[in-house]
Length: 208
Image (cartoon, rainbow, N blue to C red; front, side, top):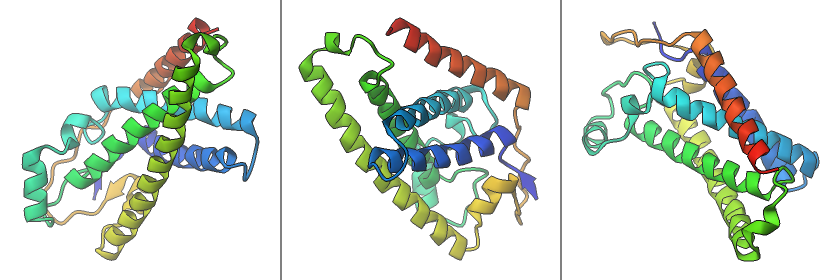
């Protein structure tokens, strides 16, 4: 049994899922209001900034360099999918990077369309139109990726890899001789989250 996901990463993952669900429901007017939609968006935007920072200096399995889907990694995995990766396999890594990029785009466009930005008119009508269209189209892409992600989890479960359980407990059962990955401290994660909050607050202050 190996510990591959630290507690901050697991908390981030489930908070992201909850906030994204809230954003979809409030965005389509199925629950909550525009005010809550904006609040969910700011919280998720803060989490995404944290995840990007954590992907650079966090735990070994969270670092982008450890799972970035290079041509060689992708080729090796597609040639023999039984080769076990610690953390994300190349296809999973590709999905993580796509999701983070889409969520970042959604967060940035949503921020500049929100009431937190006083000078939206200064951006110009055409720019605002592009931001609105991007926000809508990007939301559809995110929903599609989320559905694909859920299907992939179900497929891996059938194949004997309980990904949901691993993201709850942080542990995976391995048969091969694999090295325990280095996990960063909770204190570092908390400090990086504080830094992420400061970045978002600075953005709000500069746009008031």
